[in-house]
Length: 346
Image (cartoon, rainbow, N blue to C red; front, side, top):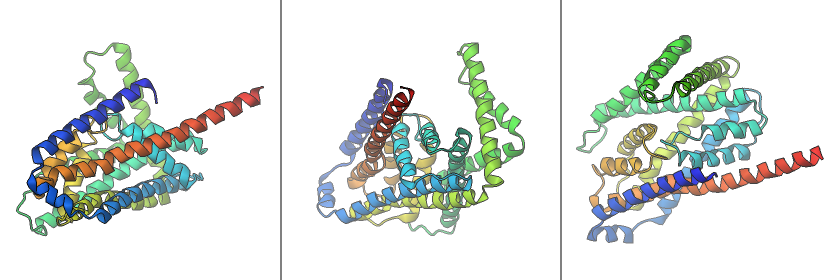
């Protein structure tokens, strides 16, 4: 990575660590030791395995969506792309910053840039659709009082779900009216670019036009000849988010608490949506504070800090470790390819 990227990684990890230490300091008491003494390590391993399984589903999604467009992307190549993507996502605002890495890796697997961009764009679209569906079912289950907890999660869940519905409604409308989406994005971006120089603003507008055109091109491809890619994408996206949302329940069981499946799904949905907003590098700090506040509603205060620590070790710090290893492999491959090109020139 470049020096600037290492700087942002240090900021992200540092911010996350400080917030975790504060959370632990505020929540650890004499009962915490008793919980840890009887912790079941087996369920913690299950949590880590589910996290690894989520990455496998992501890699399969990338592979099958590329296959529907007529390209063969090896599974291990897709998996390494997913891991490398994690490192970039950890140093960019929000956790949705690894798209260029996945596009580059698909290109290295002989997928043209246009089609690689289409695959990556549709991955994000499918994430939004599946999260919206999960939100609907969670809201209905809460409405029918399936939850036995005296905790009002209905209102925040409804607000989050309405936000997703608005975004998806704009998405559906923009399919037939791409100029509308361009105007909307430019109007929103103008709020943040009032002090920019005119040439920089113009470059941004050109980039917006290009990205919206890429978005519509991607949609056209998958709605047309690559419909099977959408079906595979929805399947593996559903499996991915289900695996990720089950991880906190396994951690709770390991700490001797009930799994709280429904409540945990709802909290994870809220956190996933919040972390898509570009507030801090990798969502660090935001995730810890959000998880502590929301899980603190139904998890004993003695272990909520330890729970959040373990959750972030699996969901964030493990991602950085895997991302660094994958990036090393990519850098090594790129160096070999450059040497081969030099030899051919000579």
